Image 1 (cartoon, rainbow, N blue to C red):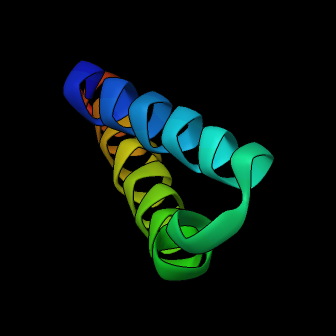
Image 2: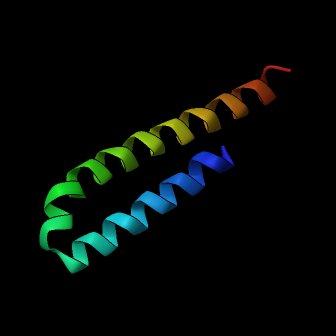
Length: 58
């Protein structure tokens, strides 16, 4: 879960930097970085839910 959270942070920062700078990088990778961030957030959330669920089922 920690790895997924770090990857979310990296993709968020890369997307923000690209958006602020604009130009060709943002046109090429902006949407890809956004989709990657959302996917990674979903994975981190799923891991969190599974961790909470497994604690409650014991």
